[in-house]
Image (cartoon, rainbow, N blue to C red; front, top):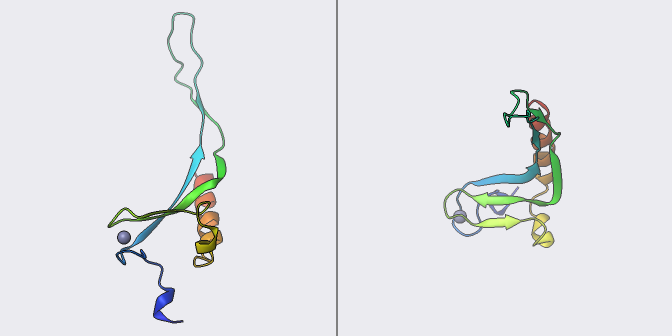
Length: 92
Ligand SMILES: [Zn+2]
C-alpha cells in the first residue's frame, strides 16, 4: 500500500464522511377534530441509488458518486460503507 491510497480529501487532506440519502415516511392518523394520533407509523427507509458520496469535514468538498463514476474506483470501500449504513438503519 502506498501513501496515495489514503482515504482523505483530495483538496485539503481532511477527513471524509460518507453520506447516503434515504426517504422515510412517518404517518399519523388525524382525528375528526384535527388531532394527530400519538401512534406514528414509520416506513422502511427507501434508498436512492444515486444519492450517495463523500464530504470533507474540513473544507466542505463534496463528491457525489453519480457525478464522477471514474473516481469511485478510488474508493473500493464504497460497498462496505453502504452495507454498514444499511445495517445501522435496520436497528432504528
Ligand atoms: Zn477538504
